[in-house]
Length: 77
Image (cartoon, rainbow, N blue to C red):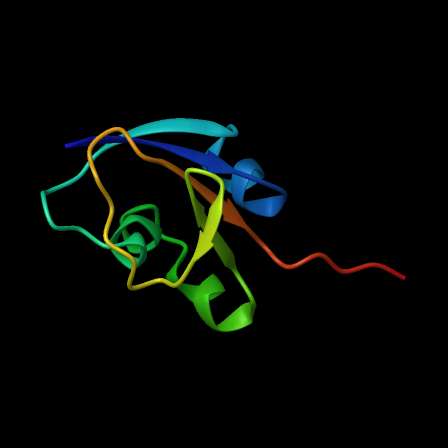
């Protein structure tokens, strides 16, 4: 199934852009998407995951056509 992934901050920089289309197997979770993109190290560092504008846990199932946003924690001084 196909999903759209929106990346922000250093995730977008690492992946070479903010928007990506991804083909994933049925019954995948948000965590699977994070791992597929190589960002699993962010899971323990406060990564926020949103599906269709609603914040979800990493175990949330993903459906065909979903828009998944990955938002790294914000730091500043």
